Length: 70
Image (cartoon, rainbow, N blue to C red):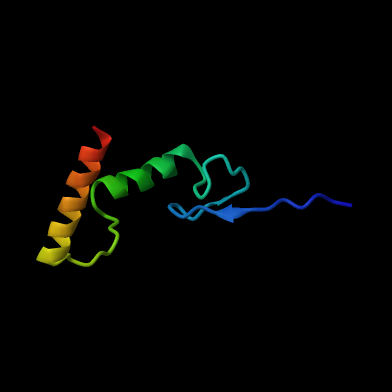
């Protein structure tokens, strides 16, 4: 019986690969390209703007947490 080789497609260069060392990328180069895209803002995670009350509540919670650590 023959061995089945599972392949994946790199999300950056679209090349097929079977070594999952850098999955979901085919190589360190493609992984680094993806990371650079995050760093330079090419990718972004959508978020909602916080209103003033939510911002104040978060600030107070952060201050309280910092005081609790001391």
